Amino acid sequence: MRQFLSGFASAVALGAGVMAFAGSAAFGPRPETFNALEMFGDIVYLVEQQYVVPVDEKKLVGAALNGMLQSLDPHSNYLDADEFRSLRETSRGAYGGLGIEVTSEDSAVKVITPMDDTPASRAGIQAGDFITAINGESVLGKPLNEAVKGMKGTPGTEVTLTIAREGVDPFDVRLTREIINVKSVKARMEGSYGVLRITNFNENTGRETAEAVDKLKRENPGMKGLILDLRNNPGGILEQSVAVADVFLDGGEVVTQRGRNPSDIERYNAQPGDALNGLPMVVLINPGSASAAEIVAGALQDRHRATLVGLTSFGKGSVQSVIPLRGGSDGAVKLTIARYYTPSGRSIQRTGIEPDLEVALSREQAERLATSRFQFSEASFSNALNAAEGRTRRGAHEPSEYPPADFDTRKGDFQLARAMDVLAVNGNLAALRPVPKVKLAELGANLPGRRPAATTAPADPATPQIPDRPQPYRPSTPPAQPPKK
Image 1 (cartoon, rainbow, N blue to C red):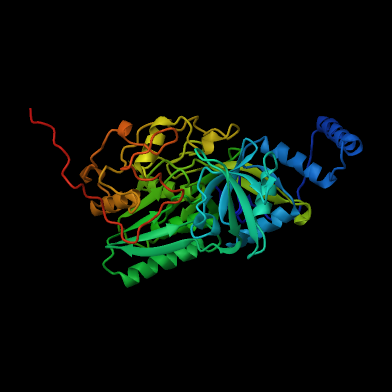
Image 2 (cartoon, rainbow, N blue to C red; image 1 turned 90 degrees about the vertical axis):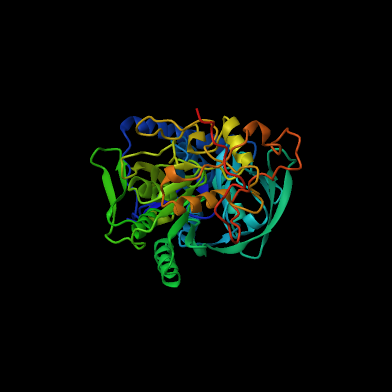
């Protein structure tokens, strides 16, 4: 069975959930269900006969199916035949579109993250933006799948998105669609450390990861460690997340999937052999790291293979099965069928994975985390599944670390710099030199409703901007020592 995982309710970039390519679906409703189905037929007939304008019956039924499934949880929905075909195509790692991950929130289309090196990221679209119209036609209140369909299209064609962003007036962005060849793995050296960036998990990610690690080792025999960057990675194919973890684990469990019945358990294990031969690792995560990305991060954390640096991940710990209807000619049903668990038995549904070293990308982000009661994550969905253990996501709090006054966030990536510091002490956080703090109350001048200060760096971008040559952070003056008693 081919299995897929995606962090959000819908995606322009990739498919979501677990895909079981069964030939047909078998239904067996209880007798009382037939009365409800008869009532549904009566309502469809009334709408067809008496609604003020003619209706498209197929679209009407599709919307009803979608509404029924979306009432279960944010990740269950109905895909029509075109959407199902698009799902199969885009999961292969290429499609015509803009490169945006989106979800539905209060009948609006919300941007989760723009993908690296795509029309969306180059146009400056940010995580948290709302898309209110496509080519001048409102998408408010429309099914999310229709908005996704409107953004995809033939490469070279143009599309105009109307963007609503907090603190500014709505504005239009004109983009040209491209073939989004989603090369999911990029690698480079930063000093003595390798940096491996994985943007999503498509059919090629496991192979690309193994090849990239092999090339880094071959060309840099003195490499002292590796940073695996999973920030803003929305997920993808489950098997590929297992394959990526397998590159760095010397056998053992990666993830367990547990369904409705106690006997519904499926375990995924790594094969013997660590491609890095024990070299120290750091994994970078943030609230845009979801699902398949969380599987990798959770496995490497639980197995004590890597230190996690950054911010708590999205918290999407459920599995979906995409079941074709009549071979796909009638579309497909995407249905949540299980939760997944990290090797230590954690369900991260709604709660996410907390890093070993909590580091905000910017001072503005740190203040938002400390003062905002709303942080977008799986827990933001009113009908999201609860974690199996009944745990809750950590609320507003001051992050453990954020850039000090002498760090220029316009030129540097503070999370990446701290990851390099962690590698320098071989993952021993107790030996890590502390970052001097300033009061959060003195920061955040660029937040909405505040007077900007000339000395404040701009708000952090949606996708972390990684400089050409980031350096481990070193304070300009040693931190003050407490007086001796």
